[in-house]
Image (cartoon, rainbow, N blue to C red; front, side, top):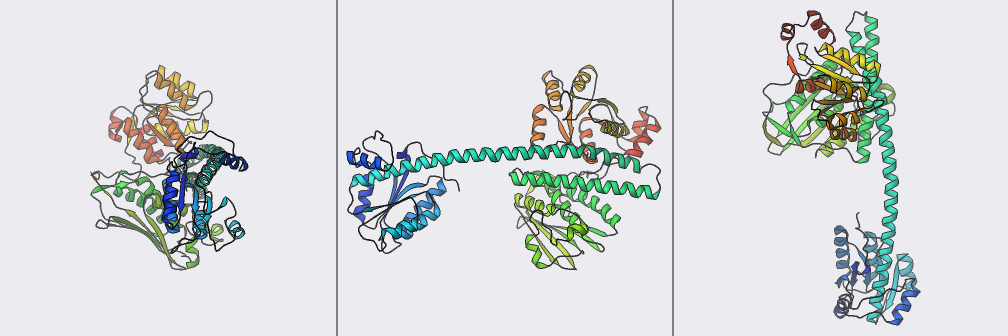
Length: 581
């Protein structure tokens, strides 16, 4: 709970008083609103005894105060003050306040709300001994007998408020120091994760891309099986890297979702296409049941896709035979949309369901050994659904399968869906014309990127570092620059900034293994026109190229004078990059 900033002047502290005697309440009001003049010599002596330095005190001191006649009212005022971030520093409490709570019970409840409030018991009679009160309240408690002198109340208010202010300033100082330590540790962790992601994604790009190129060549069944094993292992490692980065965002509070129009038809089509292929390979039946939406929805289509992919991956992992079904239903009257992923897999006992969405937890300790996985996917999905304002739950019976249900708010945009549905796979009949400058320092990735881009009909020039990029970009004509961001001599950010500073207007796309949000923000600030993560998603690659370059069909490509051999080379390698799921 935020208790606000410590006042710099003790007179800005807030005072609370409770007494069932109306005359004493009026006296409190008079004292706190300036009815007593400057401190007497006896008050200054008391101040010294309490360990306070002597300060010049203005006449007609005024405190921000509240005076009530029941303990319950005092607790209500204190709770409201905390909610405002302006808590009371001192409470003056009568011991007997019939018909409600006595002073001790009131003090207990005030301390339960805020352990730092000073308590002054002011009473002529008490059913409790001073020792009992002192032991019960433990600290920050004083006692004043009635009848009291007005100056005593004022002096205690002044002295205790000053103590309270000093304590708060000390706490603020300690909190800032602790926060600096925490922030430093978080930055070190983020830097480590960013470095780890980059160092792992770079070789994975070469492994995945070259494996799929090799798979298109003449190989026997055993060789194809070996390549398939490499591909599956590489994609599994990539998924783990993505999960670890997402978990880091969750822990640091940097996980966010968008509220923008998106085409749910496209999301479902793309997810369905991917898992139809997976189901076919696994010998499973896969069914998608959803209505056609005529308008786009408001939300985060990319994060929704991530949730559905996690749930469907989980369903297929634990289903050896049978069917996996994705069902979508919209309830416009209730403003809700429901997604259901149902499988006929191993199921789970009821006692394991409560811990299913916790990080690094699986329903059965033996599952990781039998099926693999880290237990992060469902926790990330749960977090995403919560961020999108929805709910997720699971129904399962051991031996009979599981059903995951996601409910999200349904907000319909005024924008219609595209009448031309985006295809969910890389088309062979898609070429681009243009000249591309690729900045890449890793030789194995230079070869891969050159081959993929040439297979799309593009002329490719390679630069080994940022300095070469700048020299080539300013001396030759290019239609697009693909810029790696972590290179020797001059990195991609510095190279991009240098080009933009001299008026270079050709699109520059960040092509990098640095995928954390702070990196993407840096690329955009430097002047990049877009972003592509390694390993490259083939759909995103075509989308980006299509946004800046002229596309054409195979027939048009040949009419422009390109050779049939070039077209055939493109067809043989068009599926080289894989989806970064």
